[in-house]
Structure formats: C-alpha cells, structure tokens
Length: 495
Image (cartoon, rainbow, N blue to C red; front, top):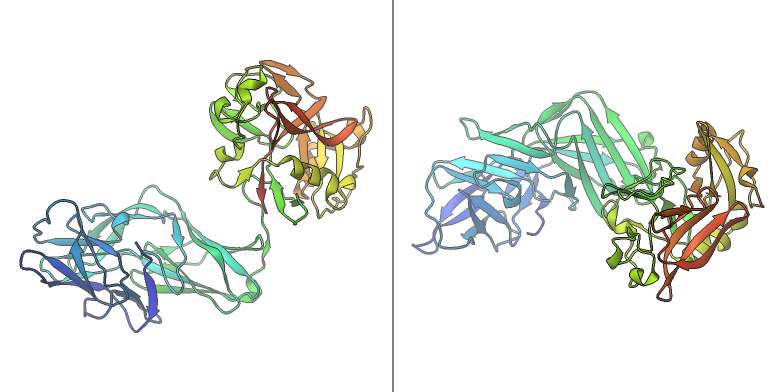
C-alpha cells in the first residue's frame, strides 16, 4: 500500500464513508470527511490527508480498495477472496488494514513509523455507524516536532515516555461513536520515526509522530543525525496529546547540542580500514555462542579459555557446512566452501561483519600512524592479569594520568599495565583490547594467554584462511592458518 501523505488545507476532524452504487449487485463505499471534505485532517495548521491508489480499508472484516488516489474522496470496491459479503449495520470500518483486528476493536501501533514528507505514514482511523454514511475518526493524536538547528540531517527520532505507546490497544466507541483507546499492558514505551535518506533541519523541517492520546509526565525526544551525532531533550512537564489534534513541540537551536554517539554493542573508537576512507567500529567483545544464542562477550577482555559443547568463542572458519565453525572436526576438508559471515547472527543480520585480510592489514600497518597505535598490555581484573593486544582509533587522546607504549618485544605483556578502572578510561577513549585467547583444535585448547588468533573473512585456497595473529613479541600480522583451528572472532560495523 502506498504511503498516506499530508497536504495543506484548512480545519479538522475526520473522514466519512458515503454509500455509492455502481452496480445493483455490488456495494461500494465512497470515503469522505464527516462533512464531506477530505479523507481526514488534523487541526492546528489544517493538514489534510488524501487517499492514494491502492489504499485499503476494512468494513466489518472485509477488505475494500481504491484506485482513485490523490483525491479527498475515493470510491472503494471489494477485493477480498470469494464472493462479496452482504454487510449489515452496525458498520465498523478501519484504516490501515494491517494495524487492526478484523472486528475493529484492537489497534496495534507500530514501534517504527516511517517519515513521509509533510505528513505521516498510515495514520490510523476507524468508524462505527448504523447507516451507510460511515464517518472515520482518529483514535490517536499527533506530535509535530520542529527542530531549528542548522547543518544537521536527521536520520531518526525516538520518543520515550512513561506509558506504553506501541503495541496492542483496545478501541471502543462512545455514544457519539468517538473512538476511545484502552491502554495496553505491554508493548514499548518508545516509538521510532525513521528517515533513511536524512532530512535537513536547516530549513525548519517538521516531523510528525502519532501517539495514543494522554497526558505524558515524561517526554524524552532523541534526534539522530547522519554524521553519527545525537541530541536528547527531556521534558518532565505534562505534555498533552489529544485525540485528532496536533501538539507542537519546538526545539530551539540554542538547546540542541549534538554529541557523538556509539552504536549498541560497539566500542567508542573509529578505525579506517581501507585507502578509500572506509571506517568502522569494533564490537565491545569477542563473539560468543552460549546455548545456541549469539552475543558479544560482556567485556573486551573476556574469553572462555576452555572447551564446552554449549559455550563457544573459538570457531573454525565459518562455512554453511560447519554451523559458523562450531565444529570439533579436525580435518580442513570439513570446512571447505564459501565463507558465511558470523555477523549475520548478530542484531539485524546486516550491521556486523568480519574484516577481510586487507582490512586487518590496513588497520595494523597501512593507516596513518598505525605503528604508534598498536601495542600489547596486561589488564588486571581482580587477581587475574589478562594478556592481549591494544589497537588505538584514528583520533586518539590518551586519558590523563595514563601511559601507552606502542610495539612489543619478547616477554612484554607488561609493557602496558592497566587496572580495571584504568582500562575503563582507555576504552572510553576508544581503545580496542583483543585478549590472547589461544586457539582450539578439536576439543583441546592451546596457547591460552600466549597468542591471539582472530579470523578474517578471506580464504586462502581450499584448506586455509587468513587470520590476524599476535603474541607478546609481535603486535599483529596476517597469515594463513588451517580452517579446522578454532580462532577468536571480533566483528565490526560501518561508521
């Protein structure tokens, strides 16, 4: 179904359905306003929605569709399967069809709404009548957000409240057939508006988000920009959202201070990985599969250090035949075939991925200042000293009171030593720590605390693949290794 759009017009209120007959044996509905003006309009600057080709409504559980898009009034014809039903009063009609149950008594508000220029996508409506003039009304209200900051392109807006504002809501009709929403006991207390191409707010762009009518004691708005910055504004005064009305929220330029943000699961450091300037974030920990659930280790320095059939963080090279390398087979032929990226198992399946051999080399050797931005270290957690390699991001400022010495030498895990608190400061500044977790061969563990072996996505003939390796004597190099060996995996995502 095409997007519903808003166009400038006057006043407010609803939509109606007036009966119209093309064929004596068929029933069709003509959708208009209660006063026969527009599909629907919202008060406050009088924005009116027009029907679009392919728009569908449900009437008493049956689907009707229009091909008269671009008008304030449109005729709808039955498009359901089988013969057309014989409808009788009371008539319950809803729009859009995928938000409502067939009885028109339950409305599911989506967790994500998509930006439509000067308007809203699929603004929900419903009606009840005992005659064929069925007047649509709006169960929700609308928040219009007006940011005034120049030089920012907004990619998404998130509203968070103390109430459930997405999920399933009951809808009942008052005596005047005005819809009233019954608040859900589940769902989410936030909703997202996405703007995939980014929308400039330099020229006073407006963003519309529909919400259940209520008085909100907490109203948190977060704006995300395409330059990986964000700004959050919180209002603890009562924000009133009325049914079928627009609530204006203006965000003055002087109050919009955008700061850099870090994606969920990522370390706050940006690394260039090729000569074209491609940049990435590293994941906050090594990849793990615990009881068939994929996740990142809680900390960068965490690793399992032992074999367990239900807990994996050392994987053979990932192919379709080996369940992402979770196999104890000890012959390389078992791992033949094309690489299957571990990143497909984390998050949305499209965000995280494994660096190639060339990208690892660029980080370690080629990027400007690479030699001074890698080293080895010991991070002491409790009574345990954890050995590993450190990579520093492109833009790096050493935290006050700490030191860092690049490079390595035999027996030099102690070249850089950090307590847990000191490492938190290093990590907050963007440093990446790769623990020396050793490798697995079948069910046996080797070189734990002595070597770090991290897979790349690049094959080397049929039996080998490239990995990034380090020890206390060498801070990162790429070499081919047997695919049957279980290595660590640290994923990245694009900046």
